[in-house]
Image (cartoon, rainbow, N blue to C red; front, side):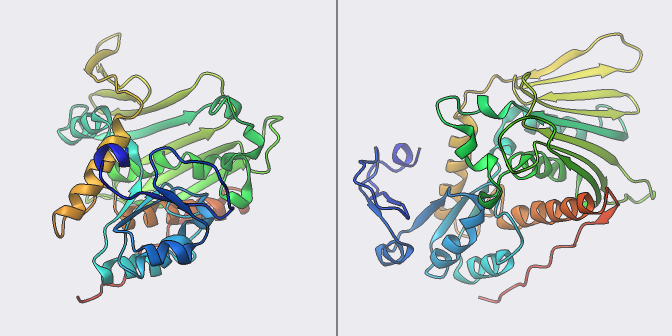
Length: 326
């Protein structure tokens, strides 16, 4: 996509292991971050395992490179605030690759909830899962990032898209209860299932919206659904089909409100276009900014603490990003 959008760009690939392999669409390779910094790129895409994101991104941010970091922003909080501060000081764009927000169907789902199509929202049921060996059938799932703890794998991190779009639609998460487990015979050293209950920030009348999130690597019926229950009915988003359906109170079946069957690369192209636009238009904020990525990590950290304490309610730490005067 970089080559398609930037046909005349000098594109280099950073690999920490030397190779003579030719990279399609690239103009060459680096074997160290020092070489990449000397090259002085204008933009960089960080798509290494999550445990290595911050080290690479920080070195590039310090010399003013605009950054597109694949989700999640990192596997932990270590170094994240420093990276965000550096990007702000340098005036660098930082976009996080939560591409689901760029889907027209999810945007319509959010808009419909915003105009009150089901009235007051009472509850959220969100689930996402796919059998891990079927994700990339041409590769050994045991060696992939998703299967390995040291690379930032596990259902919670790999499927954190759900945490991002839920807080985008319903506001900040106040607390988390979580349970992680390995229920399958998959040869992995991470959780294959994560069950979360989220309490969103209370609204003015004192009520608090509660949502459940089920994430897994074990289901053979690939699923990505979000169902919202309200006073006037239920609204459902299907992330695989691009459909938004409404079940109105007093009816006996679901009715389709919107359908947009997206192609596999549509949302990826849209986030690339947003990234480039933010670079070209000064002070334009990315659709999914660094602060969004940090807020997701805070939810993940609270979930980890909850799972380690047998599912106790854990408050989500409030994000504090230091503002730097330019």
